Length: 245
Image 1 (cartoon, rainbow, N blue to C red):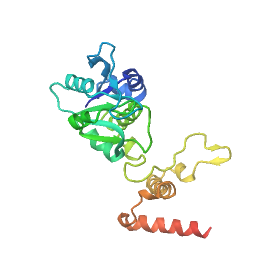
Image 2 (cartoon, rainbow, N blue to C red):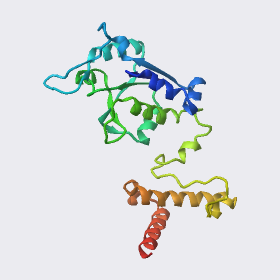
Image 3 (tube, one colour):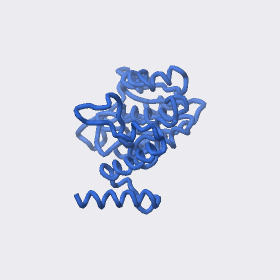
Image 4 (cartoon, rainbow, N blue to C red):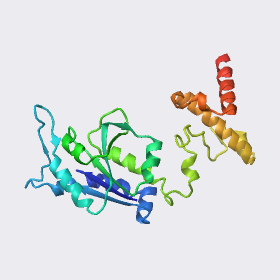
């Protein structure tokens, strides 16, 4: 997979993408990511890429031409899926990350100031994506969130697909609680089932804990109609007991 990020602050993106699991996978060539400074493509002698919006008295807006020149230069010979990270976009989730991980090439545009001239969105962008209903000063953090979520599902990035298949949201449920040594900490014990060595019982406990965690923290994610009979019965019993307490 190839990923191109167009930004005013490539050093921010480079710093994150060169570290930890993502950085090691990048160094191994599992995926390619290039961070491009949009200022390098302006024709302005002062390297300006912004101007005041028409009919507005506040803020600055990124111009279409430098972004377009950047896009054309770095995507010559390829046809990437173009994403503009924006609070106006569709909410980003695990399903979208899975979809994007199957693509060969992605171009991510990071806005700044008051955003970008809408004509560049009309000209090159395939979809707008938001990481939440809030506004940041720039698109770099959303772009990095998107890239991290996508590339960690590529073969070879994590030691095993199980490392993300059991995680929150992958299956539609939140992840079960996890524990590590010591066995007792602040008088709190690791659940006995995890020490039993009985893998079938442990798997059953983990699934039930995922159901409970999702119901307690994100009930909006649970579709009771599509739950299995076993899961529906378990959760209804849990809710009944909780209401009686």
